Image (cartoon, rainbow, N blue to C red; front, side, top):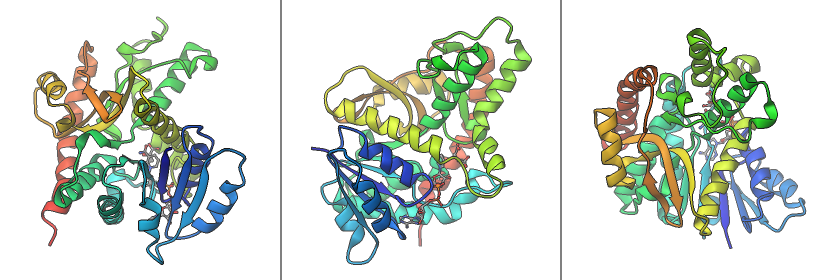
Length: 333
Ligand code: NAD
Ligand code: LMR
């Protein structure tokens, strides 16, 4: 029996994500929460002929508590999305408080659940959840994930496009490491399961890296003020949630990039820190998943000089984003 929860379930990501979770055979109960419209979304999704039992709650009458009671996995896409001209960091002002309040609810009602954070800026919202859990005495770094899967999904698609065969996109594996915003998104194309054609020169390689790093902006621009990626994010979030659930069920060898605390695997973290040449509290690296969440944080491995330069550029930005998230809780008045 697996109870999955979506917090922010009536939004652009929340609705299709809830749909995909309802279609996941590993999910037996699906509980949806939002500050608006959840009863309608839940009624609609509950008519889909798959086994999961669906409930929807609003904040009234202890709705968050009811949503979270017995939760095994909680996915959080609650919060405002970007408009053209904004950075993800511009969302912090509003989303930090939303994520903090939801994390308090999880700490009180479902402290053992796996928590998957989608709300931006992920580089800062994940540390916020961790600090709330630490304060509440329920923190397990192995169970907290920042969802960076959309960067991986984009990298697979864009590489398949360049290889000239979109049917490969599901099989193309490109580790995308660092974090989830601009220069902190570092695709390790030298480790792509499908090598790029020899015709890809340095200029087109740089353009591909840039497209992966700023794929989110491409969607924000195309939507012209109506928000950011929702459908591709729902797909990516459901894929990552499915990996976590498969690992919980005992499937071995599941490895995926995710933005995690380096406390989740101190041994793996030591090797990664050596490669980075500096200490970071959080980083998205290939993570091996198991029944208790993070089993192992993998090192970067062999990367090119150009990729090393990208990592160097990501580090100060990540450091700043992490501090912003941590101090939002630790220095709260
Ligand atoms: P949206 O505005 O369409 O939906 C957000 C939903 O959150 C709304 O339904 C809103 O009512 C709800 N909400 C607001 N405050 C809440 C609260 N306190 N409790 C519960 N629900 C609350 O936005 P969206 O397009 O779904 O994006 C949501 C977030 O996901 C944004 O922050 C966006 O930047 C982020 N995002 C992250 C990634 C990623 O790769 N991690 C990708 C795309 C979007
Ligand atoms: C994305 O990568 O699409 C998301 O983080 C949303 C955004 O603001 O770009």
